[in-house]
Length: 302
Image 1: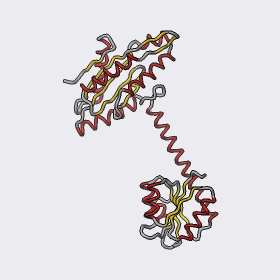
Image 2: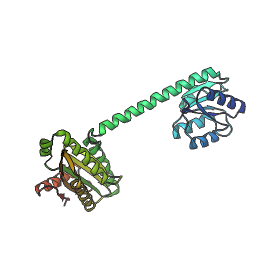
Image 3: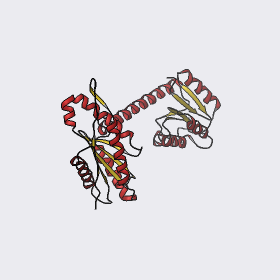
């Protein structure tokens, strides 16, 4: 529990010091503040899991402090008050408090409430983490760890909308591994999977942070290039093609082989349908196949 941080906020030095000592003796890392302003300064410098605050404070009161904390910090809040007629449980909860206690506070009850808030906090964090993992699984290709085709279309719609709103250029690459079926037939699908994984890494290594790569399906990959003209995208495509050719695979002992890719390049035309945009990239990629493979072909709208 020593890595669980509790911040105590009370302007009464006697209560503050006693509570600080009790929380520390209960096995938590305790910090104390005499005002809401001091508490916020502490939170700016050091995270807390739970803040225990009195409502009546000099300057900013405990309810406003609670509101600030829930809006700007990742911490739960337990509110304490000695004025039962002036403040209600509903008011404290509406400000974001996780629990509400009246003075005089029995330390045994405070500890039980603190443990309950920490348990709920842990469960919430676990749920958030699980949802994040599920979201990642839903949008990521399990083999290559690139985004999958479903996420590709979601992201492409966002980038197309941004291009239509603000008019930055937007380009697209579509890549296909040449003769990949023959590679799988000759060396087996496990070796083919190694090629897919390595190509995904090579593609990402050739991109900027704002570019995104996707496994489009089978041995096809696609790359969204925001704020990139068709000519600039062609340069990226040649960089990827050269990096792929330079990579050597060893599907059998003593045998090193290379693979090649055919790449299609196109640039988005304002207000055009997304389907037309993707089909043009696909047509450019097939043009590379028709020209003998290991080629970059550009196809732009008239």
